[in-house]
Length: 163
Image (tube, rainbow, N blue to C red; front, side, top):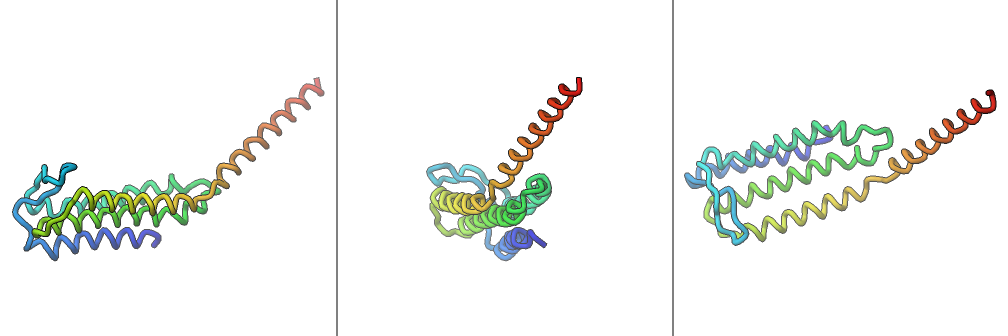
């Protein structure tokens, strides 16, 4: 199974919510402004499991679009890299869940700063792996297009000679 790591991160998010559920407050902080002040709350049952349900949902969408993202004949490198990209996004969602749980159980965090660090790490991982996707596909497509144009041009030249 190519997406086992992403599914593991999704399961870990549920496990984290389950383990700490008893220690979480009745109103869960779920959004912070840029100054680190909580500006959105959810009731405990919803707030504790919002991210755990969003993570497999997003992972499922990404896995569902995988055939479209990796279906070209020359997209072998994308086919190899795509599961890691999906896992990195699921890991970021788990990281957000860890922050929400930590704040929920009373640990002070500078949430905007930690979120920015997590997002930066996600972008570094995505940038690193997207760099491994070869541009051979684009080059091959261009060569194929030039060959098709050449064949069509030769065919029209022959038709002119026949007339």
